[in-house]
Image (cartoon, rainbow, N blue to C red; front, side):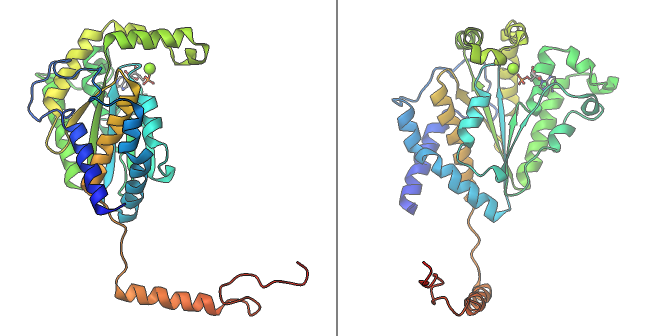
Length: 318
Ligand code: AMP
Ligand code: MG
């Protein structure tokens, strides 16, 4: 790709995602200016596929990220049931090298996990340098489901002092401090909230019941969680207001149209990679001389009956 073309693409991507970013310090009350049905006046899937060069852009940058081996990318994916987290991961990751990407889905914490501080299990799943890790649900559940359903907090076996006062403000601070530390050390954090409307969630849950091949996705727990819709909207609003930072801003991804959600998510991830701008390492003069000498050695070892190009000579036996 020419530099000029890359520059134009980078500009279009930056333009598309600018209005999805939550400005650090902004007070968010969902839905507010974040319309779940927004599609940026794009006509449809095709417009988007073209913007990201049918995924080729992510593929190339991922290869360069791995080769440069100094930065890592952590993608944090949050959203209510049926918001499209799994589908977004599938879509964004099609075409990238599986060796460089890890996906982790976080569920209700295990007994061992509850025996540690609440960030412990997330620390173990962080990406290494050169890698991309995707958290399907994340440390943010610690200020979402745990806030909406306080019984989860009871299971965390916290000493009284750790629960005193404004525990949520303390968690916001701990989380943003931790993210700053990661960012200072070369790990880029991309935070995506798939913002679904209540009506679209109703339709998607109904589909999971009506279509036999989707039945496995439906859980009666989803319906119970839906009853806490308003509490979740409040918890998400508070989270966005308190944890969107200069070093790790939140992006509110309009999720009512799957094609747009997938495009926007891929665009935010692409934008992060473009900002890192990793490069394939180039070899210096002396390494270059070594390569040339290795080449000469390998060529000199070619069997005598083969031509200089290494192609098989035509044999009488065909
Ligand atoms: P799913 O994403 O449908 O596989 O469901 C995972 C479940 O784990 C959801 O109901 C989450 O609310 C729950 N979960 C994830 N993280 C936590 C956490 N830190 N504490 C309690 N429940 C959690
Ligand atoms: Mg679920």
